[in-house]
Image 1 (tube, one colour):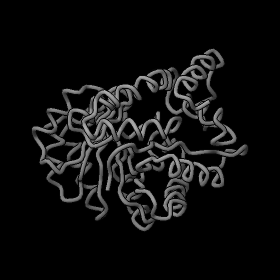
Image 2 (cartoon, one colour):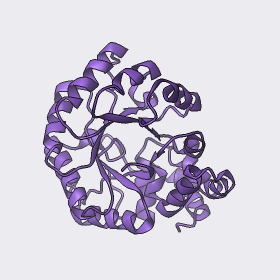
Image 3 (cartoon, helix red, strand yellow):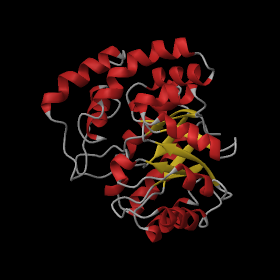
Length: 292
């Protein structure tokens, strides 16, 4: 069910700071029409840390409703509190979501045995497929391959989003886990090579801005067609680089606004709007990807 180009979807807010569900519906439709292979609703790019639990579950529910079964939906269920992650998981159980994505507990810096118990506890709260998410650059917590191998033995833990950008991690995890364990890149810069080396797809920030090109690149990479994948990825490279000139999702929300995919790129504090010094760089990257 899960493969290819999966968007880590931004969450649109209105002028009063609430979730803009009309714009959210337009975003879901935009991705379906552009060929995106899956949507992560309220992952970390979706500003999960600043949504209330009620808002979080409602956004996932609405994305499922808007998609109407046309595209797989993965709901973010991560937290640095295991109890909160379990509560959120239970709230997502009745949304109709196809899977859940749980980021490693951030700030706490748990040992590997703590990560094992965390993910086992969360997985036990649902029958819905669970995807681990390792992004130590943001969480200061690294889910090691040996730990992933232990967790892959849990019945409903089906894969990992690996965002270290270290392709050696892919080979290490592949060697330790069964062939049906799903491997997704969480790093757009290395996503193409990740798939060419046996990964199943990319959970992507760039996909918010250039979904059609990302979808095409992923299909070529998954087919092992390096030459064609490289041609497309070359057009995407400037976006891969520039979408992190400030903390994600500040740049990507600005870009999506410029494309008129959403009316505004508002964020919730402590995130603020993109500094004007980066506008030219991102505009050039969007032109290079033919989205402006």
